[in-house]
Image (cartoon, rainbow, N blue to C red; front, side, top):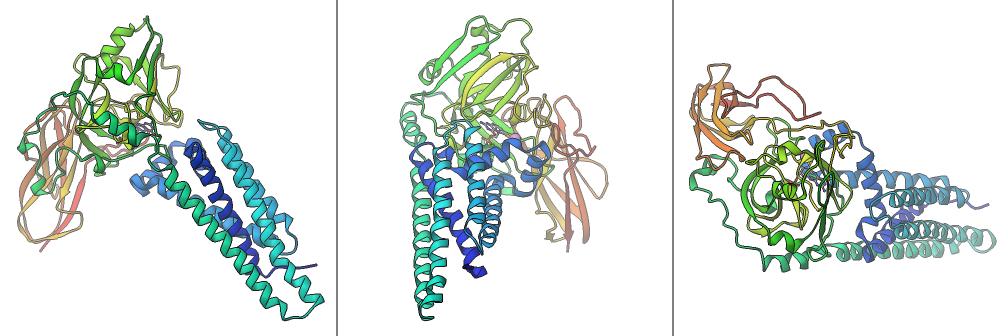
Length: 509
Ligand SMILES: Nc1nc2c(c(=O)[nH]1)N[C@H]1C(S)=C(S)[C@@H](COP(=O)(O)O)O[C@H]1N2
Ligand SMILES: [Mo]
């Protein structure tokens, strides 16, 4: 009977798990990066998570939610792998069984996901169990030799175990890095460059210089593409190419449409500045951005296809299976300006924001309207539930009017006297008529507004307050263009968006 010292047993578990993940990741990169075992399992975790988990993840990690999930998963895997190693201190097979069980979870996740390739998970399983057995065997051998021969051989055996471990570490590192390089930016990069060279010249809405108070601390009116907030369920950014892209508009229509990317470019196009907001944006949060989008009016397509009586929503689907359901009465409003967009701030859509084509609908939260990597559009009834609706979020999700204070920073100290307070407000597609602030529960007073660019976009405001030395609370509220004031009733983001007033605490000295 041979036994492993604890440290070595734990190392065997950890190393074989690392080898398994790295090998699977590399194998996936040769084909479809989405089939990498941690990506497939992570994707399954995301799809199985109920509404409050997403809310929690976004609240705690914001747009870094996916990194947090991957790191969390790796920690769990590492802990289980150490456990597997320790289980095998006497015999090799209990730990190998645990590693194999991981492999089976990976296989199951891969098999049930879009793409469905199970080869990388299989590679992981085989490499994981193989590495475990090999390391265990090499580590166990010296003790046998030790018993029969000279005790001096244990130093040699240790070195051999360390050398093999080192090889596994280096091999895993190379496979993981190679896999990441191979899968980075495949597909969409060259297609985006090609599309960039032939984007139709559609005049973009002019943004006057008075459209923001950036000098007073608000965001710039347009958000640069790289700064635009990103929220989606895709652990790996889908890589589509414009050349292969097709969109079917079908379901309860008179005539089905089957469109290529070029078909879109040759239709009537519209450019619009649109402020997109996420339902998970808490009061005062930053899951909101603005861009100039160019695309085909969704209404044109629906009118051409001919919506049949009784139809209620357009169910749009992305290449990774995500769906959003958008009420047809909104999409058919003559002035709504819902677009199938392919251009964002003068550039082809970035891969992260849905290249080659996404939908954007002014005035609706992204989860019911802004499908990225769009590949299918089905006219149907509300009986079919969309992705987040099935997880407890509301079916209908108009953006709620809100306002936010950006300056001064929360809990900062500023000199007493005249204090400039500045921020943003939005009430798409109604528009902002006024923004008011109140200090320490005092009367609401109007603020200075920026030039209105459109009713579909945010509007910036600022005010000069006279504040005495001491602690203060400043609140703001939006008044939309119908004259309705933003509600002060506090509600969380579930199920259809947060309400309440943003409050700034600061100290004047
Ligand atoms: N394919 C796909 N499209 C999607 C999502 C998604 O998870 N997958 N998330 C939606 C949500 S919740 C929001 S708020 C917007 C965000 O778009 P952005 O990442 O371009 O800001 O995209 C929407 N479109
Ligand atoms: Mo969202």
